[in-house]
Image (cartoon, rainbow, N blue to C red; front, side):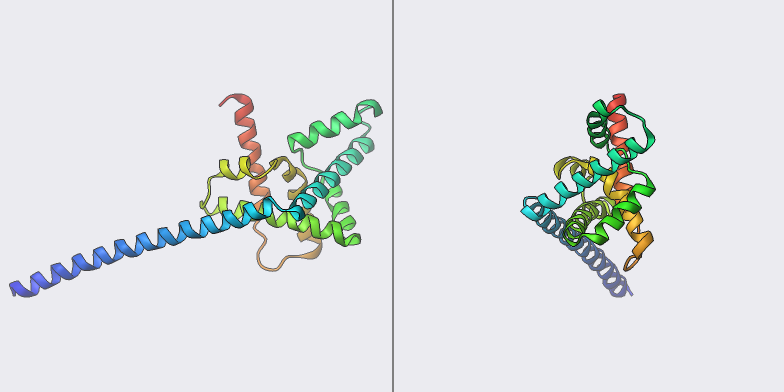
Length: 192
Protein backbone atom coordinates (compact mmCIF):
# COMPACT_ATOMS: atom_id res chain seq x y z
CA UNK A 1 0.00 0.00 0.00
CA UNK A 2 2.90 2.38 0.66
CA UNK A 3 4.25 1.75 -2.83
CA UNK A 4 0.85 2.56 -4.40
CA UNK A 5 0.71 5.82 -2.47
CA UNK A 6 4.27 6.69 -3.50
CA UNK A 7 3.52 5.92 -7.17
CA UNK A 8 0.36 8.08 -6.98
CA UNK A 9 2.23 11.01 -5.46
CA UNK A 10 4.97 10.74 -8.09
CA UNK A 11 2.34 10.55 -10.86
CA UNK A 12 0.62 13.68 -9.55
CA UNK A 13 3.97 15.46 -9.39
CA UNK A 14 4.83 14.46 -12.96
CA UNK A 15 1.40 15.61 -14.14
CA UNK A 16 1.83 18.98 -12.43
CA UNK A 17 5.27 19.47 -14.01
CA UNK A 18 3.83 18.47 -17.41
CA UNK A 19 1.04 21.03 -17.07
CA UNK A 20 3.59 23.70 -16.14
CA UNK A 21 5.74 22.90 -19.19
CA UNK A 22 2.66 22.88 -21.45
CA UNK A 23 1.62 26.29 -20.09
CA UNK A 24 5.13 27.64 -20.71
CA UNK A 25 5.03 26.26 -24.27
CA UNK A 26 1.69 27.98 -24.92
CA UNK A 27 3.04 31.29 -23.61
CA UNK A 28 6.15 30.95 -25.77
CA UNK A 29 4.03 30.19 -28.84
CA UNK A 30 1.81 33.18 -28.06
CA UNK A 31 4.85 35.47 -27.86
CA UNK A 32 6.10 34.06 -31.15
CA UNK A 33 2.74 34.83 -32.80
CA UNK A 34 2.78 38.39 -31.45
CA UNK A 35 6.33 38.96 -32.68
CA UNK A 36 5.40 37.55 -36.08
CA UNK A 37 2.27 39.74 -36.27
CA UNK A 38 4.18 42.86 -35.25
CA UNK A 39 6.89 42.09 -37.79
CA UNK A 40 4.30 41.80 -40.56
CA UNK A 41 2.56 44.99 -39.40
CA UNK A 42 5.87 46.84 -39.35
CA UNK A 43 6.68 45.66 -42.88
CA UNK A 44 3.26 46.84 -44.01
CA UNK A 45 3.61 50.10 -42.06
CA UNK A 46 6.83 50.86 -43.93
CA UNK A 47 5.37 49.95 -47.34
CA UNK A 48 4.34 52.29 -50.13
CA UNK A 49 0.86 50.71 -50.51
CA UNK A 50 0.00 51.52 -46.89
CA UNK A 51 1.43 55.02 -47.28
CA UNK A 52 -0.90 55.53 -50.26
CA UNK A 53 -3.79 53.95 -48.34
CA UNK A 54 -3.39 56.18 -45.30
CA UNK A 55 -2.89 59.25 -47.49
CA UNK A 56 -6.10 58.37 -49.35
CA UNK A 57 -7.93 57.92 -46.05
CA UNK A 58 -6.72 61.32 -44.77
CA UNK A 59 -7.78 63.00 -48.02
CA UNK A 60 -11.26 61.48 -47.89
CA UNK A 61 -11.52 62.27 -44.18
CA UNK A 62 -10.73 65.95 -44.77
CA UNK A 63 -13.17 66.10 -47.71
CA UNK A 64 -16.00 64.71 -45.58
CA UNK A 65 -15.24 67.03 -42.66
CA UNK A 66 -15.15 69.98 -45.04
CA UNK A 67 -18.51 69.05 -46.57
CA UNK A 68 -20.04 68.68 -43.11
CA UNK A 69 -18.80 72.10 -42.01
CA UNK A 70 -19.96 73.81 -45.20
CA UNK A 71 -23.35 72.08 -44.97
CA UNK A 72 -23.80 73.24 -41.39
CA UNK A 73 -22.48 76.76 -42.16
CA UNK A 74 -20.48 76.50 -38.94
CA UNK A 75 -17.40 78.35 -40.13
CA UNK A 76 -16.54 81.16 -42.48
CA UNK A 77 -14.74 80.28 -45.69
CA UNK A 78 -11.48 81.89 -44.52
CA UNK A 79 -11.09 79.57 -41.56
CA UNK A 80 -12.59 76.43 -43.11
CA UNK A 81 -9.24 74.75 -43.81
CA UNK A 82 -7.98 75.45 -40.29
CA UNK A 83 -11.17 74.03 -38.76
CA UNK A 84 -11.00 70.91 -40.93
CA UNK A 85 -7.36 70.32 -39.90
CA UNK A 86 -8.24 70.90 -36.24
CA UNK A 87 -11.09 68.38 -36.35
CA UNK A 88 -9.03 65.84 -38.29
CA UNK A 89 -6.12 66.09 -35.84
CA UNK A 90 -8.55 65.55 -32.96
CA UNK A 91 -10.03 62.50 -34.67
CA UNK A 92 -13.56 63.95 -34.66
CA UNK A 93 -15.69 61.26 -36.25
CA UNK A 94 -17.48 62.01 -39.46
CA UNK A 95 -21.25 61.72 -39.31
CA UNK A 96 -23.14 58.62 -40.35
CA UNK A 97 -24.41 60.27 -43.55
CA UNK A 98 -20.86 61.25 -44.50
CA UNK A 99 -19.66 57.72 -43.79
CA UNK A 100 -22.39 56.28 -46.04
CA UNK A 101 -21.44 58.78 -48.75
CA UNK A 102 -17.80 57.73 -48.38
CA UNK A 103 -18.79 54.09 -48.90
CA UNK A 104 -20.70 55.06 -52.05
CA UNK A 105 -17.62 57.00 -53.23
CA UNK A 106 -15.43 53.95 -52.59
CA UNK A 107 -17.81 51.70 -54.48
CA UNK A 108 -17.35 53.99 -57.50
CA UNK A 109 -13.53 54.09 -57.34
CA UNK A 110 -11.68 50.76 -57.18
CA UNK A 111 -8.24 52.22 -56.40
CA UNK A 112 -9.59 54.24 -53.44
CA UNK A 113 -11.55 51.21 -52.31
CA UNK A 114 -8.40 49.05 -52.28
CA UNK A 115 -6.48 51.73 -50.41
CA UNK A 116 -9.12 52.20 -47.74
CA UNK A 117 -9.49 48.45 -47.27
CA UNK A 118 -5.75 48.17 -46.70
CA UNK A 119 -6.00 50.94 -44.09
CA UNK A 120 -8.99 49.12 -42.50
CA UNK A 121 -7.05 45.88 -42.40
CA UNK A 122 -3.98 47.48 -40.87
CA UNK A 123 -5.82 49.30 -38.06
CA UNK A 124 -8.22 46.42 -37.47
CA UNK A 125 -5.32 44.01 -37.08
CA UNK A 126 -3.74 46.30 -34.48
CA UNK A 127 -7.10 46.55 -32.72
CA UNK A 128 -7.48 42.76 -32.65
CA UNK A 129 -4.04 42.37 -31.07
CA UNK A 130 -4.99 44.94 -28.41
CA UNK A 131 -8.42 43.37 -27.86
CA UNK A 132 -6.86 39.96 -27.27
CA UNK A 133 -4.32 41.43 -24.87
CA UNK A 134 -1.41 40.42 -27.09
CA UNK A 135 -0.01 43.95 -27.33
CA UNK A 136 -0.38 46.96 -25.13
CA UNK A 137 -2.85 49.63 -26.28
CA UNK A 138 -0.19 52.29 -25.76
CA UNK A 139 2.09 50.53 -28.24
CA UNK A 140 -0.68 50.23 -30.83
CA UNK A 141 -1.77 53.84 -30.45
CA UNK A 142 1.65 55.46 -30.47
CA UNK A 143 3.87 53.34 -32.69
CA UNK A 144 1.99 52.86 -35.94
CA UNK A 145 0.89 56.24 -37.22
CA UNK A 146 -1.72 58.74 -36.13
CA UNK A 147 -4.80 57.08 -34.61
CA UNK A 148 -6.82 60.22 -35.38
CA UNK A 149 -7.52 58.58 -38.75
CA UNK A 150 -9.87 56.28 -36.84
CA UNK A 151 -12.28 59.25 -36.78
CA UNK A 152 -12.76 58.44 -40.46
CA UNK A 153 -12.11 54.71 -40.65
CA UNK A 154 -14.36 53.66 -37.77
CA UNK A 155 -17.61 55.22 -39.05
CA UNK A 156 -16.82 54.22 -42.65
CA UNK A 157 -16.18 50.64 -41.50
CA UNK A 158 -19.59 50.58 -39.81
CA UNK A 159 -21.29 52.09 -42.87
CA UNK A 160 -19.53 49.52 -45.07
CA UNK A 161 -20.79 46.63 -42.96
CA UNK A 162 -24.28 48.14 -42.93
CA UNK A 163 -24.32 48.39 -46.73
CA UNK A 164 -22.36 45.31 -47.81
CA UNK A 165 -22.35 43.01 -44.80
CA UNK A 166 -19.26 41.23 -43.64
CA UNK A 167 -17.94 37.71 -43.83
CA UNK A 168 -18.02 36.44 -40.27
CA UNK A 169 -19.03 38.45 -37.26
CA UNK A 170 -18.38 42.21 -37.21
CA UNK A 171 -16.95 42.95 -33.80
CA UNK A 172 -16.40 46.68 -34.19
CA UNK A 173 -12.66 46.52 -33.53
CA UNK A 174 -12.04 49.91 -35.12
CA UNK A 175 -14.75 51.52 -32.98
CA UNK A 176 -13.26 49.93 -29.85
CA UNK A 177 -9.77 51.18 -30.72
CA UNK A 178 -11.17 54.64 -31.49
CA UNK A 179 -12.95 54.79 -28.10
CA UNK A 180 -9.78 53.59 -26.36
CA UNK A 181 -7.75 56.28 -28.13
CA UNK A 182 -10.29 59.00 -27.25
CA UNK A 183 -10.18 57.97 -23.57
CA UNK A 184 -6.39 58.07 -23.67
CA UNK A 185 -6.43 61.54 -25.30
CA UNK A 186 -8.90 62.81 -22.75
CA UNK A 187 -6.85 61.54 -19.81
CA UNK A 188 -3.68 63.09 -21.30
CA UNK A 189 -5.49 66.38 -21.83
CA UNK A 190 -6.81 66.39 -18.27
CA UNK A 191 -3.40 65.36 -16.94
CA UNK A 192 -4.71 62.17 -15.37
